Image (tube, rainbow, N blue to C red; front, side, top):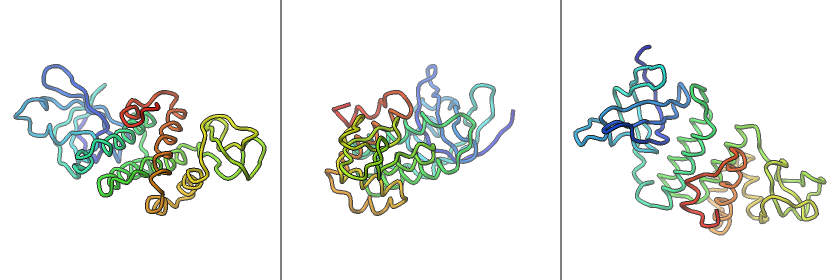
Amino acid sequence: MALYRDEAVVLRTYKLGEADRIIVLFSRGRGKIRAVAKGVRRTKSRFGSRLEPGSVVSLQLFEGRNLDTVTQVEQICAHSNIRSNLENYGRAAIVLETVDAVAQQGDTNPALYKLLTGALAELDRSANAAVVSAFVGRLLALEGVQPSMEVCVGCGSETDLVAIDLAQGGVLCRGCRQGRPISSGARQAFASVLAGRVRHVLETASPEVCQELEALSAALIEQHIERRLRSATVIYDQF
């Protein structure tokens, strides 16, 4: 057992006892960490307000057997603009819950950390509705389940692509259709994300395409992690 320092994003928190909180973090150097922050629910706590979900922090922790203990916290970025808009906070919540679901405790993943912090920074800066779909597309690529978006995975057709099913591996034509419907505009935008043209999608996607992509992205992540996203129900009534 020893002291260590790391930079991390707060994924979620929940109460422990009368004054403490369990903090779930995704860190640059150690992957997912579960730690206890003692006394943070007291009004005189030195760092309780710094450990809000979505915040990027520099921490010192004491390594424990089951839970580490937070001993120092310095806030790097609070992402306060995200919290000023309920819809945008909902988008951030989907991103945070997704990382919590796919990350493994102690499994370092610098690429995922960079993707997470980049998505939160963009949401804080622009509140762009396409950020969730851009994040999900790049995450699926990192996870090795990048869907095919250019040809039907059922028959190889390059035309009349009207549906997508992650379990099947990508888009399907009208004759092979199953899974979730997808419009031509959303398919092309998602294909651009997977090809690395994220900034182009963020700058050019129409509100209608963004709305479809948000719902589609949440559905794809739910299919990948094989459970519902609690945060998605806050934004999407159809879920």
